[in-house]
Length: 385
Image (cartoon, rainbow, N blue to C red; front, side, top):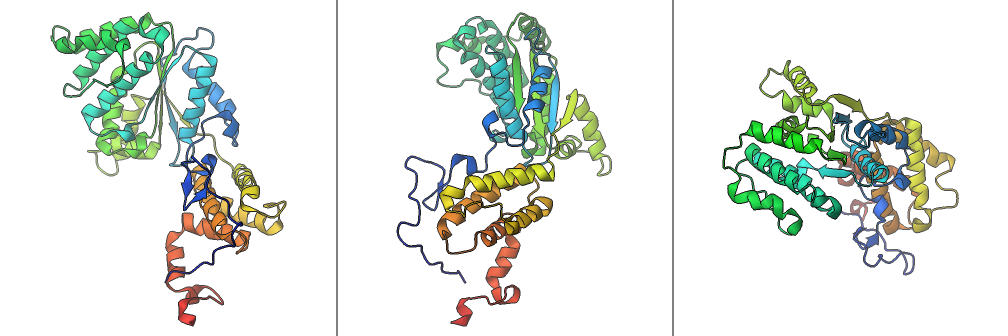
């Protein structure tokens, strides 16, 4: 039976932030509390800046300002911060090389072989077109990329509305795309020759490869392999290595599947880098900082969460419960909402512990709600009425 929570007196709750899309149950949820990757150095509480800088220099040679052509895999478990690293990397490359073309591609937002290829090529072309000073000089390149993509996925639709006249040179070729005098090999050679003339670095960031279906993982892998050795383009793929190797090894026996997938992946990715380890003390600092940032919003006691009881809970949570930055974001988002709803009606440390159960052990919460007398001393429920 649902518990009935007494509403706090008028004036004890904060009104929703006008125009803020990050709200839940009518209560304000600050954008940095929601379960999203970070987007700037200012939010980098785990201090990944040095790792990102070295990664940027591996992708774009700081001496020549040209892409090195390397294909790097950033690996880590779901929620460990791969998307945040890609966001920081994109920011870092653009800051260091103002003319750089940084292409973001998320295969999780697309399905089907033809659509995956088309969206990949369209993202590349659209990003080029977004730079007016480069679009005209790269018009021949966009035309060749369009033709090459059409060969890779003949049934795909490469026309994206709203791109404007900047791509006219590329899309004028639609009617004669497959005058099939140009074979795939010939187009590939032509594209490589045109890319050698490009003076700006091109970096392609592919995120969430581990979240798509097995056959789509293989499609993206084949796509990257078909363009990976083009000059002037570097790649970063973010994925859970075990998940991707399982997908690429489909067709082999269960015992040989991962090994087969690893061999396939090694043909595509030249350098596979695991995310830097997140130590317990880093998670503790991150969690304490996130809780402290909510202090004024939720009316937490002065010095919270520095108290002995709260610090003991944080130690337990970061040792055994909250293992990734995403875990912490989900936990903080839940505490933010419930803390605003309950105000001063419950002990805040107890509420933190309950939020951890909601995020990581929802079945336990369901059992408590179903039969509170079996698990909680002095429980109050409608059975007592």
